[in-house]
Length: 241
Ligand SMILES: *Cc1c(COP(=O)(O)O)cnc(C)c1O
Image (cartoon, rainbow, N blue to C red):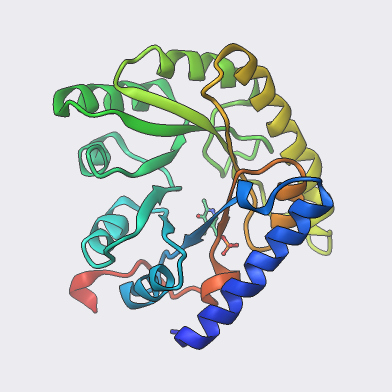
């Protein structure tokens, strides 16, 4: 695990990258929320992040998020990995923003649970912009239909779109590869927003390509390695610690 001093330095560097990219694009740095992706890292590191002012934290597995939630007071949690219907009960009611809603069956499950619990579940619709079979996300052309399907539910709030890009080809510049795809998601968001004004967020960009994402309008960037260093072998688990 990296030291708090190193984390502070990496956080400053990352915020600087975001600010430079925002200013270059004529945007306000404050319009981009930095999410710290803490998967595989221990809660101590997540707590240090919160103490340094990085309160938006993301996990890609429900179990790991659940385990860390009680260990990291003051964090705002985001689920950025695939959500199975049988785990919906562990997410609804925990104030977690779900970035990965990509199919009607998941909308149904979230809506049913949120209605039962009397809460509103906030979510983003994940779009498979790169049409990568290994990545989640609805098809690009299905985006508006899925947004419409979800927002018709009174217990769901669709706040934007999210994408995870395919890995760039060996030797390619990740920024160059990513930029047209991020632009495509922004155009899709603009089209959807014209019909549904509450669909504002664009969750896109990671350690290697956040500049491209900010240039194309990202409102949330999800950064793991650049902040917390290389990841461990598997998910952090309370019982294994
Ligand atoms: C792990 C992960 C990230 C962070 O990736 P880095 O390259 O380490 O910044 C971002 N988004 C999702 C969905 C992830 O699973």
